[in-house]
Length: 103
Image 1 (cartoon, rainbow, N blue to C red):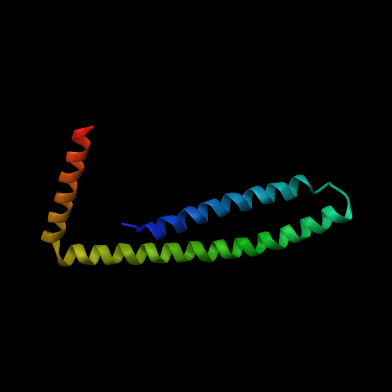
Image 2 (image 1 turned 60 degrees about the vertical axis):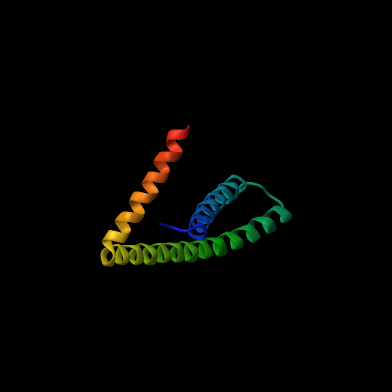
């Protein structure tokens, strides 16, 4: 089960991918614009997008690795302690049932 930090990282990666995609589209739409200032801004934005893509890729790799570690640790724990795991799962299910029954 991913913790809040991992969920936040996954959300950050998804948000950054959307932002990069939008910036790419903006670069394409302004390709025909002339002017020294526009050309300068487009060049800076292009450099920053390249850097952002690299960082997002690294962050995404980190998120995937951490998620796999957590999943493997959970799997190992469940295999080593099946009855405790079953008890915890039953307790959580019971509490969720109580909460759902109150609504």
